[in-house]
Amino acid sequence: MATLSDGSDSEAGSIEVDEDEVISVGDIFEHADALWEVTRIDGDASQPRDTLGASEIRAMWAVRRDRAVVRMTLTDGESSTPSSIECEPDRVFSCGEVLEVEGRKWRIRALHTGKGRTLRGSRTAGELRRMYLHPVGSGG
Image 1 (cartoon, one colour):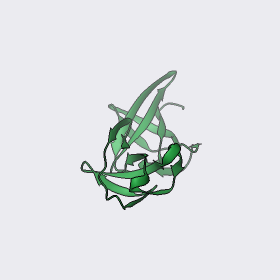
Image 2 (image 1 turned 90 degrees about the horizontal axis):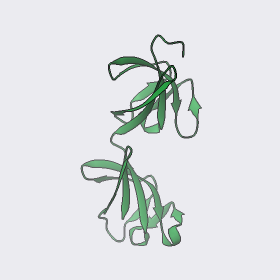
Image 3 (image 1 turned 180 degrees about the vertical axis):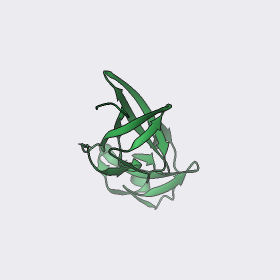
Image 4 (image 1 turned 90 degrees about the vertical axis):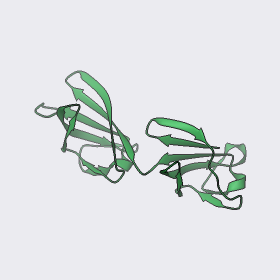
């Protein structure tokens, strides 16, 4: 059984593989007309492993890799609104870049990768956990 995560949606599913196949974290596979990357595999006693034979896997997690859903926080004064954008995983976003979201222009203030937040530089959509934006023309 595998848990497949597509943006904020996750679902349990069965993945067909040969019994003697070896699966590793980082492997890319095709399922339901999409590309997925293995992010975790567990053997007995729910112990995470880097590599396991298919017959030894008790649980597996994978994330969709042929597209990315980047979460955004749009902050205008005291008001913060969640939003998201769907794009190619290799699309680059840069601090200071202006995007049009919901009919308004917003400037990327910060990028968060899950390992930390940066006010400078660029990251690909596949690396991002969240972007923080302020309206163009605001002091923020």
